[in-house]
Image (spheres, rainbow, N blue to C red):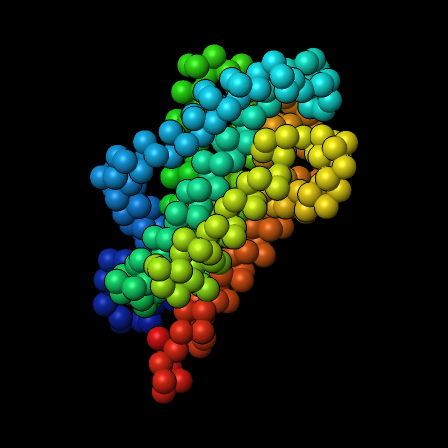
Length: 299
């Protein structure tokens, strides 16, 4: 015990091991223990759902092996940033398919949140003696970790199929950072959507208005200049303001060691906005997105 801690103990008070430990240190240890428990729960649950990993890989691999193969020579990509030479279509589409993995898992986490809420598990979690924002952040970290692991598994299979990606460079490390931030942003979006999805039956319809527009109106499948060149000006403008576009572009530019421009700031800004709104939606004064008891108390 340090001199300061000894001075804080009243004269004659019994010395109990750990009694003088700073409250802040105990609080941090408690918070980290809660994060570990939440993340491990999600990892264990995921390890028992082998079909979830298979489906997460089959979807983008079909695009890579079938769709990209069909357009490999028909839809070549010109020499534009971040590329220094002409590239085949499968190389261009690979970062977009990585984004697809992040997007679908982020939205699937929203479904899991709705399920946990209906089963009462989410209500039990949010009554823990920790800040609500921290508990939601732990859930977000667990979702992002699963998203990144699935994305890395897809990248390994894509390389095995012959897709040329410059991973083992400094750009590969930057791309990993972009991957993590993109996973956090899309996980925060899923967290926000779970506030407003009241029942599991409404999930499919809601996702159709989120997943497909975000994916197809982006640079995941085609570059922005192609959209503008084809005269689809409104699609071009929507793609420019789509957060998913910036997540994909950050990964794409990072792979080749090029400046991603404003993409990181857009991704990080959207991450903060989505997470703050999700925390606001899960505030007990409003219940879960406005789900309150008739008496006015939290649901």
